[in-house]
Length: 56
Image (cartoon, rainbow, N blue to C red; front, side, top):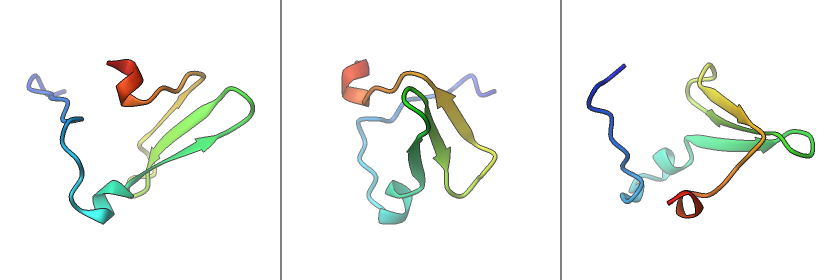
């Protein structure tokens, strides 16, 4: 794990491919999966989903 992790959410993705790399699925009524389309082993499942702006 990197000790220099950063959150670059203020930066907009300039490459359309990068912007389309991540996707979301709604499974069931209250479950969500966000996944990396290039690395199928990278995904997060949650019962709560908020936008970055709501989180701040």
